[in-house]
Length: 404
Image (cartoon, rainbow, N blue to C red; front, side, top):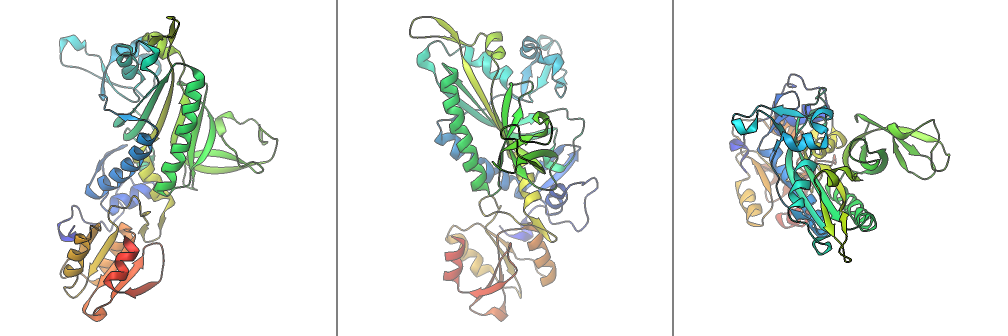
């Protein structure tokens, strides 16, 4: 990609209303644009990052048997009335439909139990139809009264939700362990450390587990056992001791990037999601739900990986791998050679822009490798890793070995 053609360019000023690091840096670098509180446009660079995160999530969900689908964002309110959540789900967006058959009552989906349960009730008949693992990556809507902190607390956000359906709680619990392992793989590949945290389940379940990324800018508070390393959400902690072993607890700030939990039976009972077992007896399906905030992860990555100059993207989710800074009109040849080698490259080909301004933009954008090409370097390329201070001179062949 040529930087001269990239939309949009970087901003020098902090955007109005930016109260968090991820909002400030992502907006200044041209990854996102805020439309209103909690609602963002994902610009080309931002969408590339979301795509990278989504692909990693897809890989690991597919590896544990997940089948991807896409459910609607617009839900019939009647389904939510059946579960009682039309009145009890405080963050539910209620929408006035134009058609008389809508009776003016539809809602924007904050979660999808009210869609997937009645859907499967039409298809699941026998124990032979189970287990079944279905997931989607889709926009969610929550009427969040405190929409702030950039991508960490939004009214519209991108999320992966996986639902698993089983003939027994035992089978569900076995799959639950597989999902937990898959989540650790996802966060390791993305590059952010995630701590498994015990939490209360609230409206969905009696108990759940959260995946929290520790960072001083986090909105959540977790407590880490000094002996076992077990983490607990503040909502299930009483006192200053670990409920498991009695050791001291250390208080930390964190960002929740995912959660997993078994679902209560109520949803299956309301929508009659049942199956006939081997003996011909009718039984209620056991289920689990596993959420992961794609756009929230993007914000969390920036909160964890940045410095005073800008973003420092991990290689696996960076929009490009190499940022060529062309000086003296140089750089096009290297740009084309890297493209031919299928390296993802952003080439700052701007004329009349100072080297200092180009370097500042490169630091703000945070692409893993900056390569300076100028007449002074001759047949050598000046390479610098964004996360490091030192630069070195390499040949094209050596550059390819590093970036590929």
